[in-house]
Length: 135
Image (cartoon, rainbow, N blue to C red; front, side):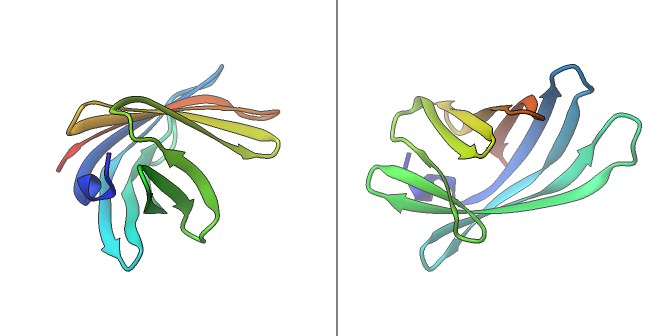
């Protein structure tokens, strides 16, 4: 995948499966906007947790082309992970001591794509699946 393939607006639907707890849902829009160095990803939508009032949520990441890979950074510039060039089965991980974040991207049904995160640590144990489709 090339960075420009993502530019624009995507509908996103995310489910967070907590081990031993209730699932959370996030539905919204992911917008990839150009900046001087690549793309800025802004996720905006509504987070719903069972038994709680839905809340608005926003998150930003920086995506940069680095050769055949896409480097993903937190919005403050800290490195997050890399996305490889393969169309499906792209995997990466990020250590946020003491937790481990593992992601698997699937671009096999492009322009529909998904990211599946598995997060484990002393106080974290969940799987988060996000599906994207053109808006």
